[in-house]
Image 1 (tube, one colour):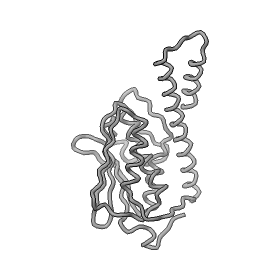
Image 2: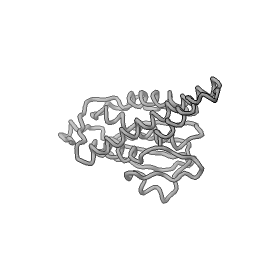
Image 3: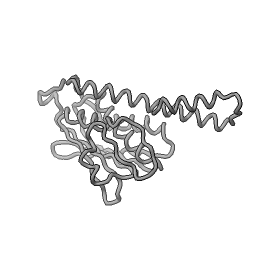
Image 4: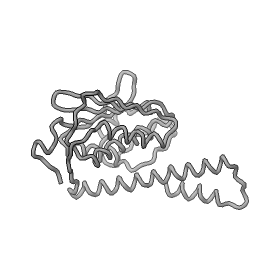
Length: 220
């Protein structure tokens, strides 16, 4: 649990009988900062999930450049990981969508957080946008631990955690992807996962080119 880790590292720093090196102190502070972020993410997931459970997910659409949100979140996530390289690739003709920018930003955060957590050795993370006839698709691919076939069906279920094939412990609530799926579905889109020939893990979601407002729909 993040609080346990935070307490452990801070208690170690406060030990009078140990003279920590500057490098070790910096490492402990970095780990404390990382666990604080994990705690914030867990609390945000729980609050968002509670809103969804009581049908209080309100979608307020406005014309939005999804590629800008993707780049903003990629920059935010990149600052927290020096071992990952996040590449954002959207075509020039990617349309302006009628979506809720706050909730779409949360979708990108949840999916990218998931990609970082399950690729602990680092590597490339691709965010790619594609324009189809009636909708757009965003694919997020990482070079992580992979997902076994038996984990595919419950992947987007609440509290489900993918089993790691290594000794890696992945923190979280198991709510990030279910929240992302609910938000996407509230926009009239879909989400899922597939594996490419390179065995990279690919999470994708789609959104109609014609937004909720133009179709006279809303949620909440």
